[in-house]
Length: 127
Image 1 (cartoon, helix red, strand yellow):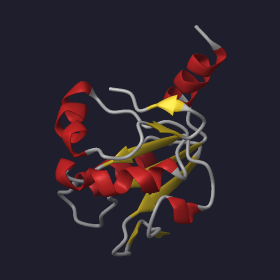
Image 2: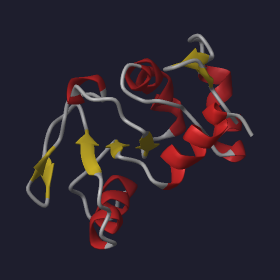
Image 3: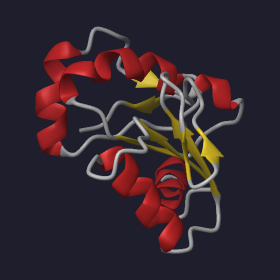
């Protein structure tokens, strides 16, 4: 395993900074469930919530974009519908070390991707 692979695994399991793209204050939405669980379970790193419409959750103000955070993000969780993901990819590319999808998500998103398939520090867009 190369150093780059080890760094990617470390960022996945122990991210220093994490963003939830599509954060929401609505109770039944993934954009609320995911960050609420992260906070409840005692995540020790920095958590950033992103929603271009604004808002807040548990006193945390939403950033309008991942790039607006102004720090490199180790891990982004995208909680928006697949049909809206294409617009988020370039924004995440400015702030995220690596973009990853589950196989199922990638099958839904891949047909909509028209951006370059490599981001950040040269890490591939990985299914």
